[in-house]
Image (cartoon, rainbow, N blue to C red; front, side):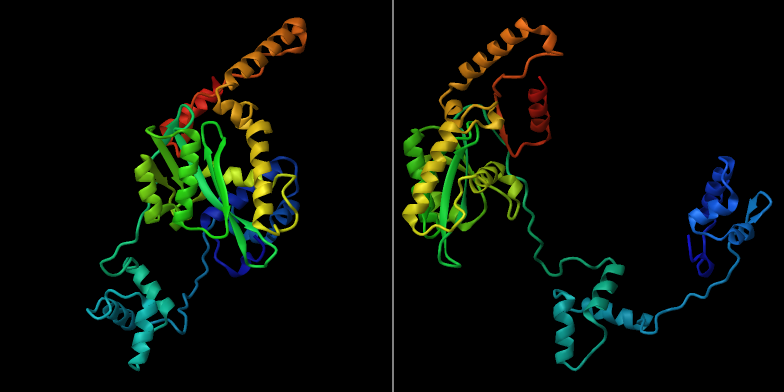
Amino acid sequence: MGGSRGRRIDLADRESTVGLIEEAIASGARKRKACEVLGIPIRTVQRWTEGDVIKKDQRKYNKRSPINKLTDEECESVLDICNSPKYKSLPPSQIVPSLADAGIYVASEASFYRILKENKQLHPRGKSKPRTHSKPDPYIATGTNQVWSWDITYLPTNVKGLFYYLYMIMDIYSRKIVGWEIYESQNDELSSIVIRRACLSEGISGKELVLHSDNGSPMKGATMLATLQKLGVVPSFSRPSVSNDNPYSESLFKTLKYNPGYPSKPFESLDEARFWVLGFTRWYNETHKHSSLRFVTPSQRHEGKDKEILENRKRVYMNARARHPERWSGDIRDWNPGSSVFLNPGKTQKNERIFEKAA
């Protein structure tokens, strides 16, 4: 509140301030100290009040207009120019330079934009409309080889500015890495090779499969799309620049690059990179107990062994509680295997997933 002498204080603000001071006084504080805490002189508060009535600010202020403010006629001229047949499809960033080339200056680009905004005309000009990208269709995986997710990530080399490209596919139900390869470039032809190998390895022929990926050219190229059509695979794509639409692959790459065994130095050769990723894939599929899978490995989940493993854990916990019930304040840990995995769920699917976790 300091510095209130030179500015207008609304009646509501005065009433609020005086109310706070009176509340402090009622609690035993001195009026001068209460004013100091709020950063306002006690004489100012005395000037605001007259008995129980709080007075309005009687001071008069002259509203000053900026010296460089455009006149009403100039604003109208800007609107006329923007709406003229010659410029109606162009943004101010092109209108102002065009006028300057003709020896005309009316106002800056910022002024053009401001005037259009004030008159509710700041919208895409011309026939074309901005593209909108709807959220990908939601998919649910109730078993293996129903929904796959894949992406490409960079692996550094010992040559600055050059990278190897890791293509990696995972089954979102089991989180198992079902296919991968490393190349020195990225394109749709190489992508189709990786996909064909993964489908052959998993015996996908004739089965319904959704393959989700980002929106890049290696994912949407003609060769890749033709391969998916031949394999009977349904493509699904994220929105441009929306990584949340492909969360499983993003999470997998984070696990890969933040793994304690990830090399601290760039890869010196393609064979070295492939050898390391081969070891990581084996560890991830066969050894890594995944937190989203009730801490079974992706391979155990993929092969259907997780149900027996989790059932055995449940028996171990129940026997432990039976031996020492005093150590348990509630039910045992939830070792029930999840039944469904959602990709880009809508509101209904999100609620179902929350219900499953709470059950």
